Image 1 (tube, one colour):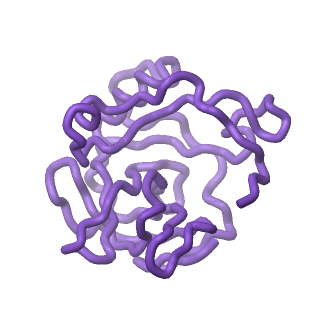
Image 2 (cartoon, one colour):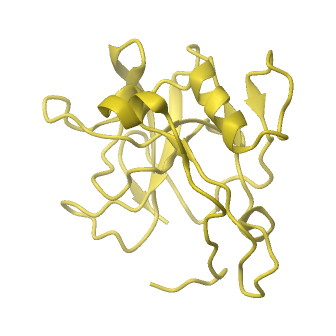
Length: 185
């Protein structure tokens, strides 16, 4: 695997949801981490090098996402980024939702991007054998926003906001998608 943009290291410890730490609750399978300077010259932020997405929470009306990841099971080998656009499929609990998609293990941690925006509204978390071709994410609610603010306290001081840090570029154009079926980048 090559690193065309260089690398970045975590600055401090990741900020992990309390419910995840105490019980492994899948509805809290998210964390935030501040990255230090890096890149090819050691003085670049990851956002300057490759862009970043904003965070959107408390939006139960969103019914379609594009997930990105490096799946490594079945027909995938983990060597390239894949995308998969899919519609809402099921809610297992009030804080765990599923979307149509066939990305496998290895894609975990990848964003669920709202199509045609620069906002993330979920994260590839896990799969359930009884729901083939469905990817699950915690529902991004105010707990996600509160954890974000713990990691990045100066990013957005207004507690009434449900979105922060508007993203810069859209996902790379070379990543293509077909509804509910992963496509290579």
